[in-house]
Image 1: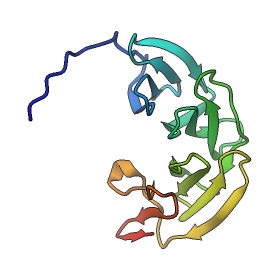
Image 2 (image 1 turned 90 degrees about the vertical axis):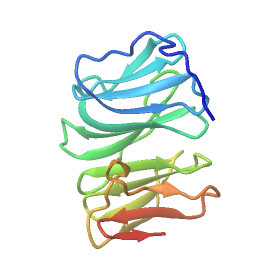
Image 3 (image 1 turned 60 degrees about the horizontal axis):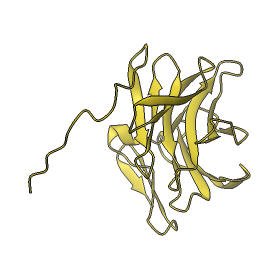
Length: 178
């Protein structure tokens, strides 16, 4: 099947530094971008207009993702003040921070909302996985230890909830766990 797309459909989404992570909202109306200068921007995907900025120069940011319902964002960042890695949750409409940091002992390599948006899974170079209550930030499960550091999706190893939210797939070097 051949599909033709009329591109570009919006103005360029510009940063001053290289973009290292992106994610579309589930409805396709917004885009979150992360740049090497630690600026996280939320954009209107149709018009290409910036909605807001998060974490501007406050922390080294590794990734940003939308929740399945598109109402929340999560970011993985290294706080300059404490030099500790954390996952933060944000309101996807206003850019206001919603949670206290979800932390590990070492760098967080990936984070993912469950399909229902009720939990957040985090993986770390401390060789552990943790599952948190997305609303309260309370640790629900973990740390679940791995034999090696838990590798993020950009290296081909997923941190992924099953569609029913009952299982989680994680990977560390040559081993996957469910």
